Length: 180
Image (cartoon, rainbow, N blue to C red):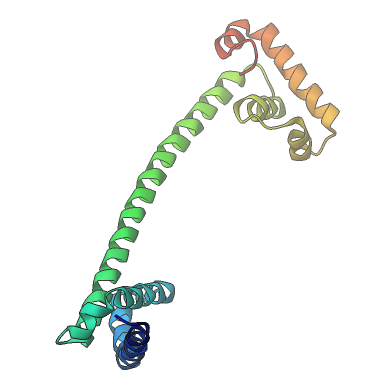
């Protein structure tokens, strides 16, 4: 094919696509909005549809019903995107369920630890020890939490650990010598 013929073909295909888009864009958008209210998704599907149409221009030009071909392509792209989102949604739900179980277990562990420490430490000492060793909260953040200086936060934790070591060495060893 000569360069001139190639140029003419591209111009003809461009004109064909422009006319096809003008004729079908509103109908495609209406059909897609019946499937979802997500404007961004509709725009993405329309772009995917026009991209596919441009890639398949040779087939589309010869097709007996190019408008129907565009509508089917748009519907196909939308259904594929909705299926992807449904799969992602179900995957996200599985992760959330796992997190929920984990949070319940951690909450139960914290409650058990708090109850075990209750006979030996007052409320502030228990909270300081749990925050520091169970949740690995920094001394700076502990100071903010208790509205005290960082050095006082360190002293509070140190004194609580000292009390725990003296009053309940078995509990201390059960939790580990390096911390709870």
